[in-house]
Image 1 (cartoon, one colour):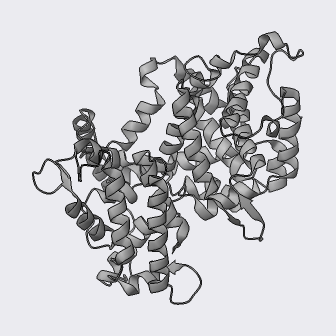
Image 2: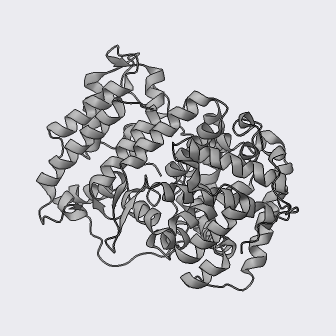
Length: 491
């Protein structure tokens, strides 16, 4: 049976049930955890437990951008959690409806021909269960186990979180003792050593791309990642339930348990720092801040990047990377096309272009613009038309997807009628006030960067013709110096 780490195992008292109004908003237990430094470790752990579920693992492999664009995925997840656990009920309902639409588009079969469906209520319940259990575990591993009353409140909050999606409450057990039985059963009987789990543990951290803040500083980032990646992987594996580690054949590294507990306890001490130092939304905003932004903090961060570049140059002098000998395959336009394919078109990072990649673009654009219906569906439909056009033109071997070689050999034949339709729909949904042009506020909603620094010319607005021209130039691989590059190529 799972060790819950409670200090009071007495029977549940209805008088201690939290009032409904305290389940969300600033008084909730989740809200207090959200800015806790330990939450980062708990989120990684919960993601691994989600990925170990066969249906979720298959959905991640086929549809998710977590390999190629992990920082984007992280930011979108945190924003979504803030909306769902915030005090505003209308915002919560709108976000739940958006997530339901998103999950409704994710279904298929895995490599063993087993179906998966992101709308399966049992699957959604497991996602919520991993978040709750990892929150409890992070407190226990850091030497501060939750008391029974706090744990009851936290569980009620996550039950309400699941109910906000319209799923009936029965998909999560009604009481804590029943939850731990349910959790142990899933861990021991249903979880697998999936491909998604292996990628997260053994590939993602070793190849994690730099966040936008550190983009352009490959030496500094690579040095830090080489040290931190294996440590994070070791800590995560050591924190997983022992029955699953044993059955999945995950390695037992000497000293891993001590390292894991030390990391959780050290992260726990960090919460004694001033509150404004540890606000999750502010930290993620800094990671995504571009030097081209008109945010006042951009100038300071640009100066910091300059110092880090000098540090990176010094590091290269001290430990130069080995020189590669032999022929280098550089073939002009095809080489550039291959780079564009990998950085922009292959959103899922599996080496091919297919519908999930274009759906990921539509999903990111819809999220940035906070689209509702019917605008969201219009954008997805436009991308679906473009995918059919690409498949017809580029899928020469008929396998239902486009390889990097198939794409590179067809350059530059991408700007067809369907892509023009995507550009026009994107312009329309970005032009929130419908006045036929994009102003600085609308521009910033899509690109999150300064208007005059990234738009050619000095016009006060971005016209439809200019927007469509720039979008077509970018998506056909002809121009990489526009604001669309960090929008769809950023990690």
